[in-house]
Length: 608
Image (tube, rainbow, N blue to C red; front, side):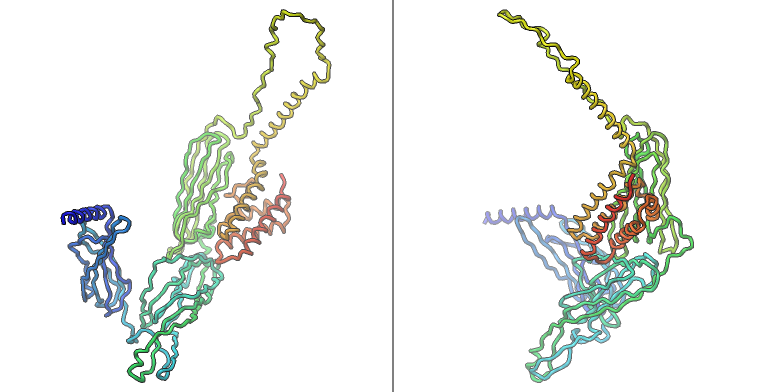
């Protein structure tokens, strides 16, 4: 008996140790929507089976407590780990319509005072045509025979809900496709979204644990299921119709028979049916952005944004890098915001900006940050100024344009010890090989014969070649390395030569995304290849490069107008396709082939 008592004590101590090691949580759970006069359950769950005391409920004056509390507990030990839970449940009924908060409850567990989360409950009116069975019954048949069932348009339907029907260009609005049903829903067999012509679409990922909700619509309490949510960005002003969406769903309907005998009611069964439902089209009015007050720096950003800029240092030496980081944060069409044209002084070698996009779509819009890093290297000492750069956007909440700017940065550059264009033309000299053991000979005590040494042929060809050939090699190397040093010092020439190599590297990465069917990274790499190629080839920083400037520079280099048109068309195709709803693999292949062909053609036209 003592042995068993000792075992129980050890087990209790072990469980107590496990309880102290884990974090105890206290969670309130209830449906978000309930029906007036219908009972529902409010539960409090603690993730331990330890004793709980002093439960204090929040104010429940808007509800009637029908029963409770009911307490259930469970505990188990798996692989030496103890786990348990304690659930306290009340059955409530709403007293009136409206949305009511349920405050946090408190409880004491293992000498800890815990506080639960709060809830918000929406009380819906009773169904005006409530029946004993909420499932729809169809036509009747003779007793003993099969019966048919039907699903009326009011029993189940598909609906597209929009947050706005009147918006500005590029102003995001949410479209939610929702299934409303009175009978039980078995599942979704298929669902087809419209093409959203005239809009850029961004799909929102729905939570994996979402549950159906009750919603009162036209006097009926429907069980609703959110199927899809998309953000739409109108591209042009005008009136647009969001086309119909359709889906096929499974429903379970009660199959009632006409009562003929006392056994007929026993054979009442359910019948599963499939129905295709269509969501009606929706008309959206898109208002153009106002012309009055539009700043020159406005490039199409619409939303609510903030700008922050930082520089890593303001004092440095030549050939040391400096970085300016600009971050645009907020909610709006972040994807379509262009890289800001930050300009370094002429004595700085500026590189292509690095852009980091960190945003996600949500029901309130695309929210996040767009960070741009501008790297440059000063080549000459002195005092320099980095001028401010402005960012303009249209604020849909105030219906006005707003402009924010970076500060002005003053930079002092001292002369550094090294140079990026220095070429070392002094090589380690080879030592003259001397046969030292021939300076002092060993005294030979034996017989020896004296013979005349042959004369050194100072006038021979071999003698002069030994001197002339190394001298010629040294002269050739001198001129070669001097040319290389000059070329390295000519930044424009170096960038011109690297343009094709850089573009091919980008296109190689794009081909990897093409094989993996990653659409957005593919188009990003093709765009970087196209913009970067001309930036290197024309020695114009990407921040200063625009489509208009591209066309002017290409025309100045005598590039054929048809080739310029192909290049511009390629850029426009990639920029639009990045945000298009869907793109076939054939389209990606064509874009890739076109990019390779256009860059190869330009390489043959632009010479420096």
